[in-house]
Image: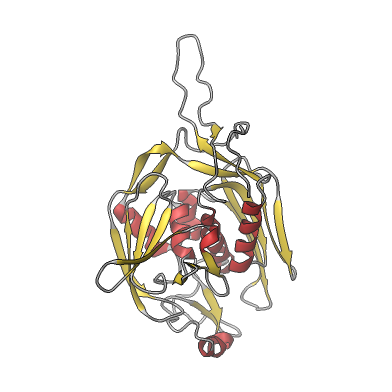
Length: 333
């Protein structure tokens, strides 16, 4: 993809936190559950990590040793059929990573080590809520280095079979604009557009659950998927009603979950995006295709970092507070 070392970008004007530092967890925290596709029990433990570590997944052996380790970025995606699967040349390391990644990105966690003792991130209740609660329990702490961002500077679009996704420049942070349309009376056409900030993510997105149609269950089971799905972790829809006793958490829970998935899938950029993402009738495969197209086009993005607020000097107003400065050498190549 090339290397822009030595080239300077103009500062990007944003309303991001002044002098934002990278963050990590204050303490470790563990969750246990089952994989929605494998049905296998799994324990996941999140640990603090150093500056610039990113999000690192470690597959643990029964004796507690590390079998394999992989950094969560776009190059680590090995499948996107029914979930986002991370792995490498040795094969898959873990599946269904998107809800956890969404919680980490949605709450501005830059660095963490994720230990997992099974083939799949636990589905919990089908949303990101349990991961948000776990992150809150662990707490966050600022690191020494400034946060780095991938700033989109020209649109990148992928279209296929009536669906499309597009990343475009956006000067106010990260925004997702999602549209879905299902030939089902309970869903139909839904749309939602939100700037993704921690408060908004918690309130509007985190609790939206994955969903599926009762008519597809037998087909999924025969293909080896959804073996751990239940009313406790999946929003299940029959021909005319929601089968879960709880009902819907939001009137438009379906499109909200698509936004959640997009936040998680695009977290695989490796750093937070300064961009607006529009997705129409998309899913994991399209999200990955758009992010891959962005990373492949080095003229479409640049790496920038949060600047320290300027010190007040006698006779001068504060200047440059909250601006973004260019960084050198993307870590994605």
